[in-house]
Length: 484
Image (cartoon, rainbow, N blue to C red; front, side, top):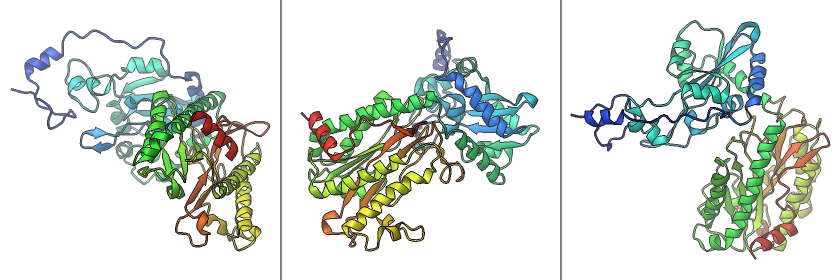
């Protein structure tokens, strides 16, 4: 006789469990409590964040799910990362947060009471802890119990199973963070119909994150510092990567090793683009060889354990030295980036740094004869012909997401004004496609991007990634020193 597998996430090839084994597995386990003084990092900041969110929606229930697991193949899930809004409100960052939900319950004049609906530890008197491949402690690791989670966060906790009872009862006006958890939408009986309301919650959550506090800036600086080390690792690994038939993938692996060792992992899929692959904005196949006569565009960032992201790009000569044509194109992109950085200051409009960078690019392309119209004409809003060679914007907000605060409304972000404490990237580029017959042959197939992370200060902006060289000469000297 064997026990049924009802309700457990087991595999078709799992060995059967007898009643005798089940009884034996349920006995003689010592307690393993978490340290009583353990708290989430930066724990004193989260009550204020929740209060600011609640103040924007008085009298309404706000539901912010962490998100759900997604199958990669058969019984294997992708690594789980909680939704950034959930992280920002709770400080809970682990893979064990799958399915968990934060509810801000309206509490009259006091504002909102936060309640976390969590999956507690697997009890040792059942089979989940050793049989369930998705949630079992012996399969995926220990979770806090409800009391431990309450101590970690300072928030009241309830069993995840009780969320359905809450949502089935009398409903105050309720908003569910858009696109995070269809199960919650289904339970509230509001799929799709209130998408606009949910979108407003997402927008407010994004906008509240636009300005970073000092702790967040420190976390972002930590991410940048580890990223600098990862770039150094890559340069040291170039001789081996150049010999490998998929050198791009070797580069990806080298950087991702550093990201995983020092933080949660890579903040996004590493772009290791050699030669004409660098003309593909999000080249993540990384399956090509490295040509020593070409450039390597490396766009990579470390995500800290607190899930703050760096986002840095350097374009490196694989021979160690730029050719005259490569240097000409590189210097134009560097001049554009420098103009963009110079435009950063509190009170400037977000678009100003992009416009400053694009003016330099357009003038350079016109000087080269690539643009056959004056730069001023190409820069006109109803023209934009230079964009054939630049393709996208010159930067974005940075924080818990590498493209942070993306649900913010245009008047607060794209058309908004920069404020002290905002963190962003400046990353103009030239993408000169290999089949573009408007270009002279010697320029075709060049892809160059230079990207740095900056925090807006009272005086202007501080370059957070300045430990990496930017000028062509400094890049060459840096590479030579690392390859000695």
